[in-house]
Length: 432
Image (cartoon, rainbow, N blue to C red):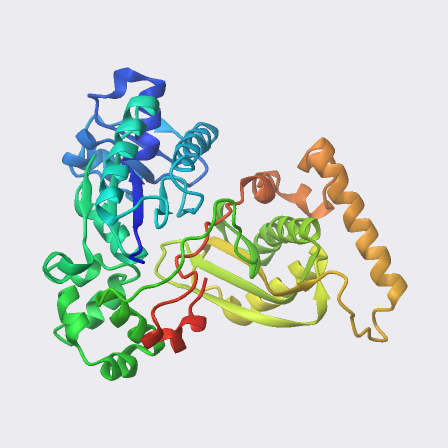
């Protein structure tokens, strides 16, 4: 049976919701931006009048105002975006029970078996697009193909408010002339490296020897070769599916640059308390801790991992391990730090057997867990500030961070079932 896969991408989603909130913004160049005061001052999205003047997602607020003098900026209203995203997904569910989100504004839909033919799939996405505009006041670009990679490529080809159809029989004429950077997961660095091999279009990639790509890029080279040849056969996840959790982490752009070990310690404890609390809620422990960082002018970044002597979700253990990793990787302080992160990896069930040491007996471990659970319960009921470590009181500005409240849950990865049999041996290496 021919697969019928759609990818939908809501156009300028945050800005579109803001225009529904305030219709006077429709003809005004404006951007939805993060808070400059909280050092998250970048453009999250802009409406088309602003985009036509050069405003791009990811620009700093001041850069956006330089290219578009008089740009109006709007603060985020995330609850509204989540609500409208839910409305759209409910509408999708009237067409298929296989809807896989890719962020708030994008989703794959598997129409295979829900419509009798590929041509019927074309009519279905046109009807769906019209309903989104009529019922919700939003516009959407949709791609339709026989695989997820080409469906997403199609939704990116024409914007706004468009449908792009990539039939199996004609994909070479449509897809192969496009720049290789348009292919999913060919980022800027990969595109530059491909250019050194004179691979500039998707067709060039498709016709390059697979073994050469493996030699240059490793296993991902073979996967990109499969994508370019339309051989992606990854499945669209069912509605409500959640991929297995492989790590739990938080990172933050700090309220100010970190210049001392104590500054780092304060933020590490704030992040570790969030990571530990989330692991406890899920009944998980980490066997490995990762520390990551970006310096103040964003020219130097890195990460380091360390194995724990025993699995833990205790914030003190997480923070102390992260601090040791920080000292190993950044003790020379070449410049202040702007952003740091903590992640728990190699997760195991909280009830998994633990090999204790003489330094940590079973009663010590139980007391630490009971204390952590009590603190988490108090914070959940009365707020994060109801109980704090004394260290946090030394710098209220830094310790004002509420990492758990502000954390982001990432969507299901695109690799869900792999590529076709020819490339199947590479699938498990890159499943998200």
